[in-house]
Length: 192
Ligand code: 3PG
Image 1 (cartoon, protein in one colour):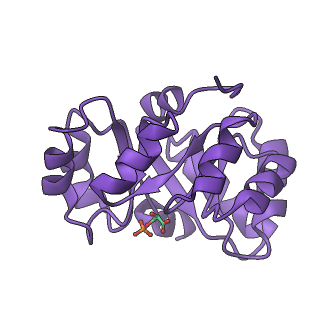
Image 2: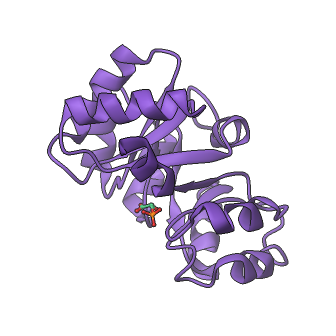
């Protein structure tokens, strides 16, 4: 049993569209955060792809206490632990490793591992993960593949991400096994 502060399902059900941010500075993160909140978003993912990411997570938690702030691009257990330390409330990865699946199970913040194949889904299920990121969604076959996964894996809820835009987001959200979608398409609007 995990001791997560909340379940991934709770996050994705309440926040069906999750903005993904790549931030160059803490100031930029806060200003994008402000724009997204004004646009009605109340959960976001800051990718650990830039040196500013961890500080940005900490500052966003302080500035936006009512917003759910997660860490994305969590590639290993060190990333996961740094994300927790920075104040992230959930962690997302583009793929999965045995080490991450094992580690995150015993920590406090929920982890949403990434999958793109049936074998990876089976690996995640073997560790008790039923809420998964589907990445890169469009390049991996998009809606058609998620429909196909619904057959053998009816218990899995997906958060597709990668190549999702305003024009195709609803097609994904209409699928019964899609709990939420995530992406960066709305962030460029927020920046402008
Ligand atoms: C990512 O990790 O890059 C996300 O899945 C966002 O993808 P996008 O930039 O194609 O929306």
